[in-house]
Length: 157
Ligand code: HEC
Image 1 (spheres, rainbow, N blue to C red):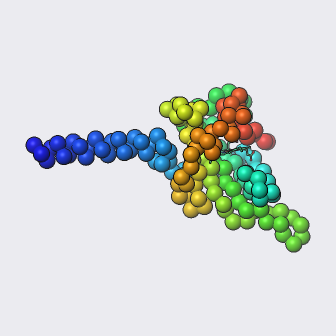
Image 2: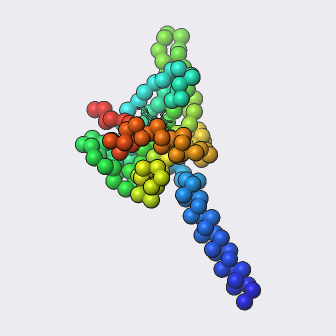
Image 3: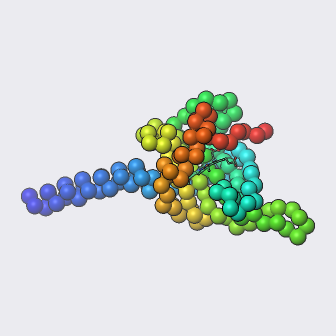
């Protein structure tokens, strides 16, 4: 009997731990196939003091592509990935991307009610999850584009 209640306790503990992990976003991992997503756009912010410093490329998975082109609310499972690189000015004056700095990630998830129906996450260059207060450090800035379902990027042909 003791063994069974211990087992039940462990099962309940694991469940609660898994759920709170998911809510915090810790269970999120960088999608392995992000490099094969559709390239949306790129941007360079060369000012190191700017919060979005870097050479960045934005990608979207197939689920979100149609909405990105035509507008509206993104379907469940849409994923956007942004990859940030260092900004390197070459001797000939050209501006190139340097080493990878970090990744940002958004996935449409209707259970993410505190952050507008999107899960936000950031990863280091090796794809390791970075601890962030995503509500304050991500979502609040993205509310500026609530009308386009919290997505800044526009599709560029
Ligand atoms: C100061 C405002 C600001 C903050 C804070 C911010 N973002 Fe963004 N985010 C932007 C802008 C602007 C773009 C568009 C960048 C571009 O066009 O290259 C963007 C683009 C993105 C994209 C690509 C989809 C889109 O909206 O275009 C993702 C994914 C993303 N951000 C995730 C995050 C995550 C995760 C965090 C927190 C770790 C975060 N952002 C914090 C302003 C912000």
